[in-house]
Length: 101
Image 1 (cartoon, rainbow, N blue to C red):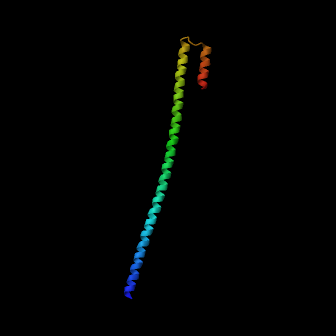
Image 2: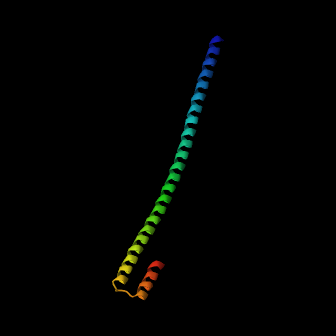
Image 3: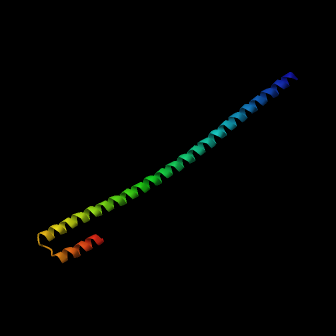
């Protein structure tokens, strides 16, 4: 009888150990999946933020270029007027077209 009790006790210990291993593995798997999901979401959000900043900066650069180009053209018009190549009315007409765009 005592051999049977020892055998039963050994089986219970083995089963308990197997249950512990099973739950440890399950916890690890769930933890890894949660970590992966959080990491994916963070990466996705960071990607959207970078894209948004890139587009904003790109728009600003295009705008700055257009303004710089307008300033250069306006300076050219002023120079042409000062040298007598354009009359006042021609200058005003060209300036109005330039600033409208």
